[in-house]
Length: 489
Image (cartoon, rainbow, N blue to C red; front, side, top):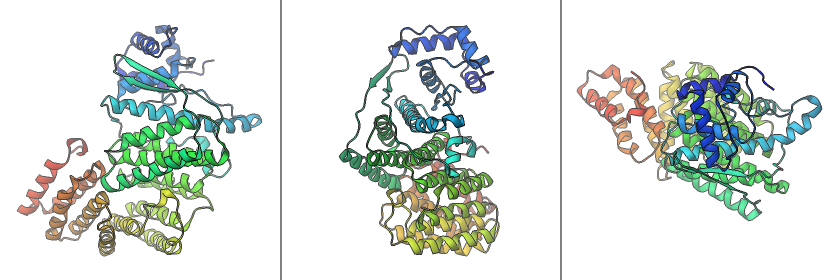
């Protein structure tokens, strides 16, 4: 049954430069490589998919997703192509639709990670930097974050596909991962701790592929039925790994990929029934938008994160969410809101610091609290000069607490924040010293996000371009920043 033109497929098809006949031939060739020799796609069928919105039968949507992913150099899912079949959603079948939701989440997880791994193997990269913002959050997740759904465990066994080989001769391995026992679940939980520690130290570039591979395996496990407690813990592992994959992707500049992982993390947390975990994942989407200067949209997401986290949210979680919201308010120059939010954040932190925390909150310690406060006040200082002194006090506290803790990336970001404040307050000599130290340390991380911050800080130094030492330093920064991280002049 057709439902009008498939605009998603049409838009992506236009980007490829293919003719309809070329796409038909590619589908047949890829299908044959996947063991689906019966495919006989032709130009007329491609036309019906695009112009009449017909959805082809399996496995054609998966084949199309692989073909488009390879061509465009970024993950393209069946949903991106408008080819994901809609679940039954009428009120009479609401229970069935909800029961199918975990199955769909596992499908999305394995499909997305599989495509991402394929791009890694072929040296391709996500070149899309435009972020859709709140619109990327599915309606079902939005409703759940508003408080009217329950979690289920995945209950159907589906074969998984891993695409390997070369672009000309793809190989598809189909296998059935078995269900996990509690010992395996515990091992997966420990693996997240290892990856999290590495990311905190060196940045996301070196371990991103390993995290995605682990997440892909967890997605395969979730296609099998498990006892309730094992299923809940597996979904939480999936949420933790997806959030980390998203942060690593953001850290190396794969922005659209990162945002999709954050949404997958929130969906996985939904299946575990863990609202605070879902709220934290959504807050990461907000931080990503703030990094790109989209404060108003970030505030909308933070309202959703607060509401979605629910009454089970602990004091430290509330403190962390408040710092992100305060950053958004600072970007808009709202001094009173910043003071209120950060004041509450300190109170929440004091109240919850001694309480046991979930794995995903381990990085939010006193150093990180000061680091976020310094970033907030440094941002506010562009609107309110009185905020600069507070920014310096907090960033120095953060650096003192981070010393010797293996947090090189955070330390570089602290140095950039400190230098930025000194440029804003008219202290070029101190700013020069902090900037040079940041430049010396930045090569020890694989974080492109630090380069972005450094480049933006360089713009603050422009007012002192007449000083020879500043002109020389700015030339060093422009030479050091990777070309891909330099915004258009």
